[in-house]
Image (cartoon, rainbow, N blue to C red; front, top):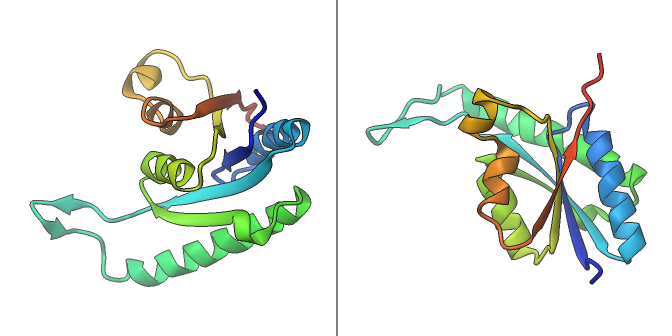
Length: 147
């Protein structure tokens, strides 16, 4: 059964192109819609109900979100993704990706993995967290880190 809506989750690193290539190829072959998401990790740490994030972080968060949005929009043009289907979120990456997939009715999430073993695998990763908490297929693309 072909996919109808592919959601590519990227961190805007150099390796994101590998994920986007696979997502676009899958969407093209199935005639599916392609959406992009990138999540900026929230710097807020809560301890006993107290917000321990520095007060100056609000401005840098806004700047970071603006830069991420601009960068993802530029990437979207390369991969022929409509700007309405490009989203930058602030929060916990796995949660935001799962919520987006559910809200936007994606039936495939394409994201990267570095193929960690041992302790890294035991502790989990964003991909692992998404995989075990989402109601659609997940394609984990093993990314090759450029040197």
